[in-house]
Amino acid sequence: MRKLLFRITAKLNKFVLPSYTKRRLDIAKAQKWQLAIIGWRYFVTKNSL
Image (cartoon, rainbow, N blue to C red; front, side, top):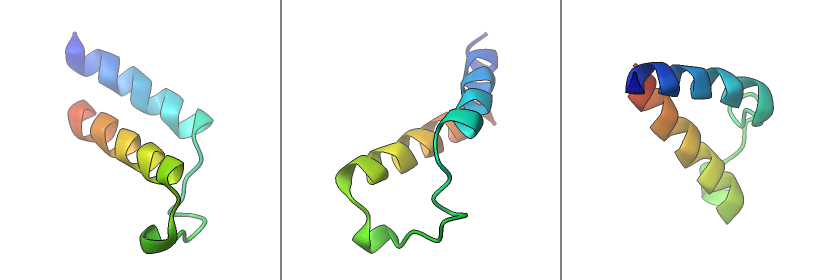
């Protein structure tokens, strides 16, 4: 059940949140809110696998 929840959340993140990899964002120059989005996407992806 938990894994299913994270898979659904991962699919929503893909459509709602921006992809900084495609934009070639430098992590060293990223703002705090951008780092928070990157961290959230990593957390959800890790738990959905």
